[in-house]
Length: 126
Image (tube, helix red, strand yellow):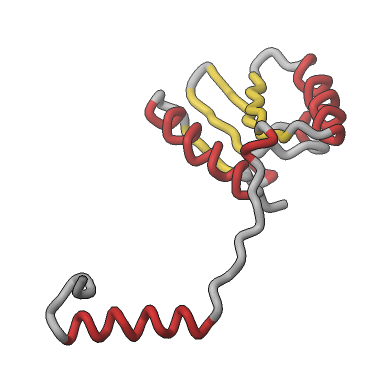
């Protein structure tokens, strides 16, 4: 399953910090990297280093997320060598649809860049 834009943004911020702390990080980890207790659950990422194993989950504030969290917490309650980290997206973090620019507008912008380059300018004349 792919991540939404806000979920990916959270991981883009969190994962480098974990790597800087000496963790080996795997976003959307493959099944062979996961322990057997995670057969019914694949975290958004895992971070591993000697003596510590983290599962990272990014959830939005929705009823289905609360049910998912209850399931995940149950899985981890029996594990001593794994830690669960949950990052919550606020309603303001959710991505909004972005309207694509018309093809003609894109073509015009490209043509303007070519014209500027031919004239040796980096910006239009004011």
